[in-house]
Amino acid sequence: MTALTTRAADKVDARRNQLAESALKTLGELGYARASLREIATNSEFSHGVVHYYFRDKIELIVYCVRYYKARCVTRYDAVVSESTTADGLLDAFAAKLVETLHEEAPMHRLWYDLRAQSMFEEQLREAVTMIDRTLEEMIWRVVTRYAELAGREVVATSDTAYGVLDGVFQQALLALAGGEAAALDRITGQVRALMPLLLGARVVDSAAS
Amino acid sequence: MTALTTRAADKVDARRNQLAESALKTLGELGYARASLREIATNSEFSHGVVHYYFRDKIELIVYCVRYYKARCVTRYDAVVSESTTADGLLDAFAAKLVETLHEEAPMHRLWYDLRAQSMFEEQLREAVTMIDRTLEEMIWRVVTRYAELAGREVVATSDTAYGVLDGVFQQALLALAGGEAAALDRITGQVRALMPLLLGARVVDSAAS
DNA sequence: TGATTTTCTTGACAATTGTCCAGAGAAATC
DNA sequence: GATTTCTCTGGACAATTGTCAAGAAAATCA
Image 1: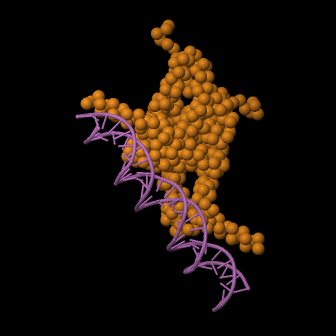
Image 2 (image 1 turned 135 degrees about the horizontal axis):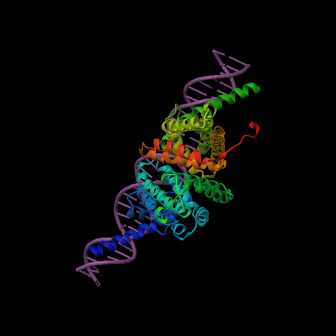
Image 3 (image 1 turned 30 degrees about the vertical axis):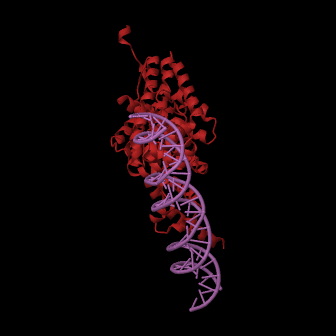
């Protein structure tokens, strides 16, 4: 019985994910405000009524989508961290990955910034948004600390500052890109190369290697 | 006749500004999506029909509001720049002003971030948003260059990077504040104190003063 | 004061929205 | 194969939206 229940729950979750998938496509295209449930359903293979079978209301769908979206984000820079062997190499790989993300996932990211802004008005969004924000901060922190480790230096900024700084220039690039400014891709590469070293302080002396 | 026309135009502009004023209040409270023309009109001293007498449609009202809002922003840190006599003093004044802004104009700023995000979906908003963004960047740049000048050092970051970085942590603070995290005010003070020096490079030798 | 223009109000409109529901269809269970 | 449960459809609902227009009210001008 437990097994059956679990399997049924899995099936429901699978359908929820399927709906979230197409909902995210519509949301990324139209943004939070303009994406109606009917439009979302039209861009899926179901009718508009099915949404209320799997989600209580619109906000629950959105929140589910936001959480679902997070799963794709967390590992984005893991390869950058694990496969880089030098500080400069990591810098290159990180910048390249940022550019790739801006290129290929722009709709997803403008949706993210949209939702984050909406969360300042709609309290129901806040918890999910805060959770993702924390996850993103940790992701960036892994990159920065690995960078410092490879450089043999210490990080002089806190985790939130590092995230805030890089998120700021990333958002700037995304915005410029939305305005057709293709040069934004080159610009952010330079910005990251310039900023990351600034986050590092004096050379660390490894006391175990004397 | 020119004088009369001008005076009439001034009167129209005055009414437009009056409407923009109360519209901004509603927009700051509800955000771009949820602020209907009726709600905006209700929070003004006019009926909902008057909006279409002074503005062609909703988007024109919003854009007008955005531009009107800009006028209040540009001079916000002028006193910080002109009245500071030491680098550390400027840092203090700048951080204090940021905190004050976060405290007193939070609704206005969450509206700004909302509109900026919307501009990635709605092309009609883009021009006005881009213009304000440039203005804000210049404003920050005046602070940063003045800071470098007082410190007798050069700025190692470009104007857009400086703006992106500070805007990032500011937005982070605003978001945290919306979530009731009062500690965000102290945090951003520390962040600014830590970040600004990082934007400066080696000591500048004033060749004229040798 | 009377005429004319400007300004504003009120009500109406079509469209869109989120939500709900009755029932059709599919799947699972017995 | 019959029955029950799950899944989905399509239409209806009230509420809200931006927009518009007809006319009242106010201001301006003669």
